[in-house]
Image (cartoon, rainbow, N blue to C red):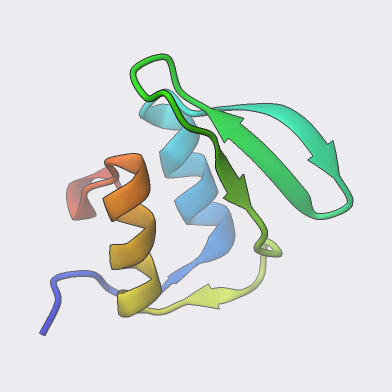
Length: 71
């Protein structure tokens, strides 16, 4: 059981930008995000109206440092 709720992709993207991730490159719907504290980039490939489930949110959080309270 995870503590993540299902959430729309646009809300997750907005939460990522609030915690310091910023876009550096975009090709189509794929956006490359960077953060000053992480040495890797994160590829955002979701459309705004997509629903992201709890397991995918946990995987995103593992790579980006997102917390359930950030949503």
